[in-house]
Amino acid sequence: MFEFDLYRVLSFAFQFLDSFAVIVLATVGLAIIFGMMGVINLAHGEFILVGAYATTLAFHAGAPLVLAMVIGVAITTVYGVILERTIIHRFYGRLLDSMVVTFGISIVMIQLTRIAFGNSLPQISTPFSSIGFGPYSYSTYRVALAGVALLTLVSLYWLFTRTDFGVRARATMQDADTARSMGVDTDRMYTSTFAIGSALAGLTGALYAPARSMNPEMGSGFLVEAFVAVVVGGPSVLLGTPLAGGLLGAVNAGFTTLGGTFIGQVAMLVAAILAIRLMPNGITGLIETIRQKRRERA
Amino acid sequence: MLEIENLSVSYGKTPILRDVDVSVDAGEVVGIMGKNGVGKTTLVKAIIGLLEADAGTIRFDGRDVTDERADERARRGIGYIPQGRDVFPELTVEQNLKMGETINEASETLHYDTVYEYFPILEERRSQKAGTMSGGQQQMLAIGRALVGDPKLLLLDEPSEGIQPSIVQDLTRDLRELSADLGTTILFVEQNLHVVQNLSERCYAIDKGTIVDELEGDRLASRDEVAAYLAV
Ligand SMILES: Nc1ncnc2c1ncn2[C@@H]1O[C@H](COP(=O)(O)OP(=O)(O)O)[C@@H](O)[C@H]1O
Ligand SMILES: [Mg+2]
Image 1 (cartoon, each protein chain N blue to C red):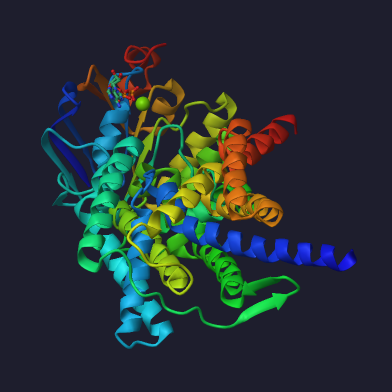
Image 2 (tube, chains in turn green, brown; image 1 turned 180 degrees about the vertical axis):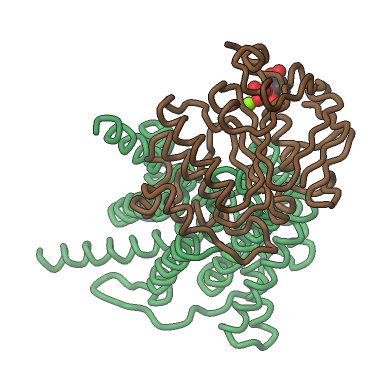
């Protein structure tokens, strides 16, 4: 009886780390671009696709895995900056227009990928072995991704709170006109932020290239999780992403452990809908409201 | 220092400013007074570059800056204090001040010492988020932020708005002394009689988007002359 419970607990823990990693890595790029420019990039999943495909192709062309991943990130970054400069920058601050435009970009990219590379690419085999215990077995690599997700969050937190670039970026997010009148070239700030968001999408694609099947639709799965997490996380994206990742990851892991992958996904979406009903401004919106009330009372 | 000629500005198709001429010499403290809605903020935003000119020219420090962006003008040495202060609420006091360092690229000087000397509260609260401070403290921060990078021209949009009368008097005195200490030229817009009379050495009057008068000396000292252009 005890053993059975321990397996369950371990299984939940692994599942949680896996879900947390997917949600956080899928979300950070989208969240930063949304927080800064007020646009939801519905082609974010296809940015991840670019990273994954570039990594896979570089690997099959003979590059060692780590180098292939670096190439994947680099290509996605360049690709993102080109799209930003030519199209997306025209839609900053216009949430709905930006969604329509990036949705169009997403469809075009999926089709172009299919035309260029067919319905799938041979997958890179997952590095490291599996951790087995009792009836369960987990990929070490996917668990390690939770560490990478955490490291990514810490790095971003440091970048945005401790560096000059980060202070200027946050000032631009809070009040672009005033930032401009303090000498900040906000257009350049937007392009840099978009480049960071694209690089993060590329990183996600690179990291999951050896862990997911490579097909032109692979981006949509990431987009759904990212979109849900951004909405649940709320306006303070740097804090909202890990909180939403933690909450949704726990729900997903709990229900996956109880009822399998499909039930886990459904439970996560139900949790997201409930969260949005209960906290229309997301978790960080709720935190801000509570703080405001405390301040008024003090 | 600043020469504005025939400046016209509109919001979309609605003309707001028509043929505005204003000039400020180095070292002067100049005011522009006018009632609510006559175009003061529009003029200030056109000077810093947040609004585009339809016609006319803006010359700053001997250079035509009419087609430059706001951030370029700031880096040339204009320190701007927006109406309602607009400090960055989620940044700390110190980070807000840091944002002002990029003003006036040509000058290496940073005025943290002077700013903290005039407004010690900013040093005491430097790790606090700016959004948690009172209106008067935020105004001190907005002034400090605009001054820290050693601007040649300080541009203020209604510094007295929403601030207690007793603090307005302190603020007016601080601004006069700061301008003298640091040699900063000041151009401000106001509708507060006390500030107009106690801060400006010379003052334009603006009404319905155009300059209608220019006062100095006895006329500027006369309460009635000044009050005629304000809603008092
Ligand atoms: N964003 C805007 N769009 C359209 N009209 C505006 C806008 N801002 C101000 N106005 C109009 O321009 C005129 C001048 O406004 P403003 O420059 O803010 O006046 P002041 O600062 O002197 O109170 C007012 O009639 C105001 O209604
Ligand atoms: Mg105004």
